[in-house]
Image (tube, rainbow, N blue to C red; front, side, top):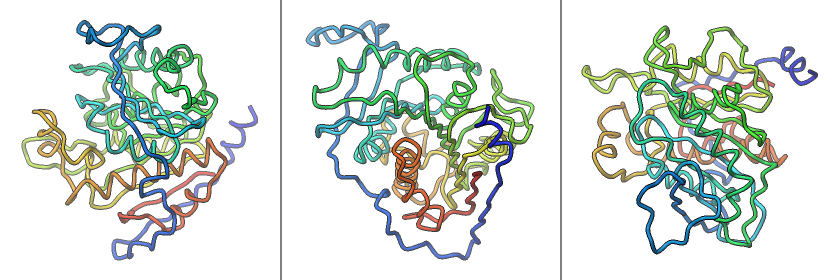
Length: 334
């Protein structure tokens, strides 16, 4: 294939920003809320046993419960399927999803499980089923003036959800719709090199991912550090963002955010026992808002570049306009 041959000949351009570099003055607007007002919509699945009786049954219910963030205004919008991290709720990402949606995207976040073991095979199948459902069921959930553009579809995931996103892109399950952009937000493939969770995604062969779409990997500078001696790092070396990017082919982008942790893109207030645990298990930055704004902004810029043909914001970020955070690494494969 011409695309794969072009990628084999790709060049790596690397910029490593020194710890003393100042945060660049922002001229791009992707790190702030976009022009659209947004709404969050919760949708129960066909397997949910306790659906509210006051809600009319959906003609084609989704295979998994969904959290959908969308613009309120009329238009046709690209889609992003976003996968939550290990043992987290999709609602913990509400502020991030709304940030992305405010720039003109429909974001679909399935709740893949409530309890899970090491094997993520069922999650991969569930994401494939949810993706296949979009063409037949999504329009029943959206207002008539909000149109999904299913030909412009991105896939993103955080932590274990990032691994799941890569696994689906590597065709470990089949989908009827084609993704055009893949985003790993601090992806993790297990506890350590040699301790990957099944099915393993990393092969430790450079540029070995056979993925025919644009890829972006975002890493956290603190993710590979322990919060305390009792718990392992949340994004251990050997199975984290560094290793995922090493296996990417072009076009691919890589950003590592300095002084922020593995869960710093979640909502400020994550409720319940799991929500409280998100502040205890991983080494964190001083606050979540800067990391969340950066990730929301760079996802918007990446989606605009590869789904909308406008690379100006992504190039501005690569050029040093990093908004509320400082980057310790920027790399890209052309």
